Image (cartoon, rainbow, N blue to C red; front, side, top):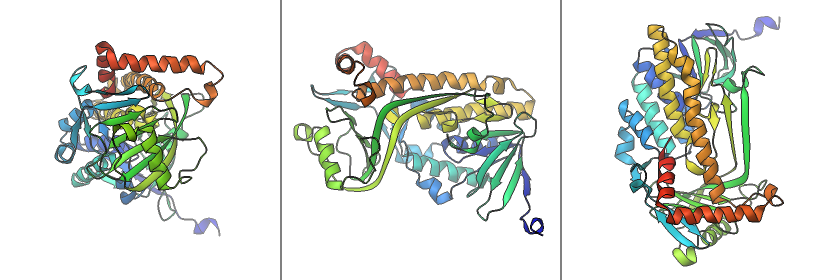
Length: 405
C-alpha cells in the first residue's frame, strides 16, 4: 500500500546535462545550444536567487574576449568600466601600480558577477535554452558508461532521472558532481591559507579610483568598487567570529584605521547591505574528467579571492568544454575531451600560484605560523612590497599575472 502512494520517478533526457547556472554553466549552456546540441541546465536555486548572488566583479581581458567572441558582452560594454590601477597602503606609505600600462598592457573590466549572470541567463532563455530552476541534483550515476544519469529532486518533492551522453558538473565544490566522484578515482588538493575575511557590500560610492589593498598591523583591509553607488570592502577577521559581531560604526572605524584614512582621506560611508565571513582556502580536483562526467568552475577548483580568478577560470573552462563536447557529439572527435583536464589544470595551477603569492603579500603570517619563523616571514613580505614598489621587472610580472588566466 505504501509503495502505491509513492510519487513515480519521472524520466527525461538530453545529450548534455549541465549542473549549475553560474558563469560556467550558463556560458556552457549557451555555446552548446548555439551549436545545436540538445542540452539542459539544472539549477537548485530559483531564478531570483541566481540573479542576486553577489560574487566577484573583475573580468580579465581573456574573459572579455570570450564573451565578445560569442556575442555575450553587450551588457558588459554598456554598463561595465575598464580598470587598470591598484593602490597599496603599507606602514611605509602608499604606492600605486598602473598595471594596465605594465606587462602586456591589459586591463580588467569591472562588472558585478550578478549582472553578468543576469545577462547570460537572459540570453540563454531568449535563445530558447532549457533550464530547470529549483531542481536539486542529488547524484550522478553510471559515469563509466555511455549513458550516465542524474537523479534530481524537484521543488514539489518529486524525483526525476535525467539520462545523457555527458554530464557537466558546474555546481560548485559541494554539488552533486563532486559528491558523486568515486573514492580513489580523484585527487583532492586542499590548502588553508590560515586567513579569514569579513566581506562587506556597502551602499556607498567608491572612496578611491583604484583597487585598494591596505596592509596593517591589525590585519588586511580591501576596497574594490562595484558600481558608482556600491563598494565592496574586506576586513581580515578573527576566525570563528560571526559576521554580525560588530556594529556598523565599529566596522567603518576599523576600515578607517587599516586603510589609513587619517593620512590618505576619509572613506565614504553608507549602509552595509551584506556581510559574509569566509576562510581563504583553495582546492583543486584532478583529473577533471571521469568518464562521461566533466567538471568546470568551482567544481573543478576553488581559489582564495585575493586575485579574483574564479569567475575568469569558469568562463575559460566553459568555452573549452563546449568546444570539446561539440566535437565529440557532432563529429565523433573526442580529442578535445581527452585533453580537457590537462589543458584546464595548466590554467588552474597558474592561477593558484599567483593567488597564493598575493595572499602572502597581503597578510601577516597566520597564527599557526607564529612559532615557525614569523619574523622571517614578515621580513620577506616587506621585501616583496619594496620590490613591487621599485622594480619594473617585478611590476611587469605582477601586471601580467594579475590580469592573466
